[in-house]
Image 1 (cartoon, rainbow, N blue to C red):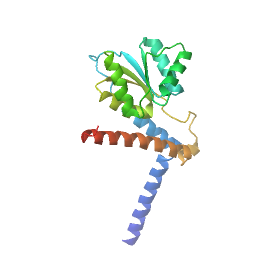
Image 2 (cartoon, rainbow, N blue to C red):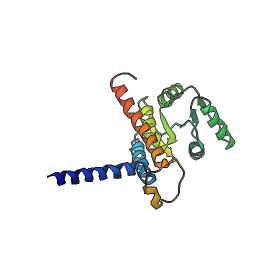
Image 3 (cartoon, rainbow, N blue to C red):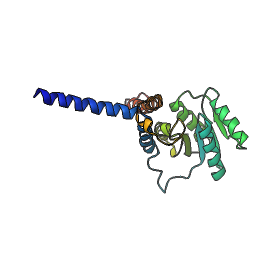
Image 4 (tube, helix red, strand yellow):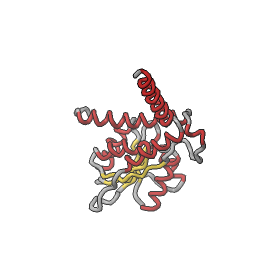
Length: 206
């Protein structure tokens, strides 16, 4: 009986170590990123939904700016840059280098909820209700939920599935690493932020 308990304990310990290793390794982090990103894109608006009327890009970054440029050139849709602390202006400057003029700048937001609320104020003032949303894959689920809760139809345009650059997986990538721990923290921030928002909304606090 005692030996069975020891075996059970060792099996459980091994399982926890494997789980911890998976969550803190580069390979495990990549799989978690992919799973979370898939949830963020979800189903696109139905065929009867209004066509996209504007592109909204959140808080810049090379990949986001490049995607906004690509989408604008492909569609001709106007671009709204959203981000406080000079982020919106920085987006405008980067897009201007590619001969893309920003239609609107929202420069007062301090977080994703304010990105959604303040951007919607601008969009609704211009009669716009359907957007293409550009942000990181890890951020998309939370950002999309907040923008949709403002009554907007959102078509996600996620970028940068893996936030630390790309290279082929190697055997060491299945072991715990600083990179794996860092991405686990990013994922926990996104998951926790979305859960907290849902709880606050359900309680009527937002």
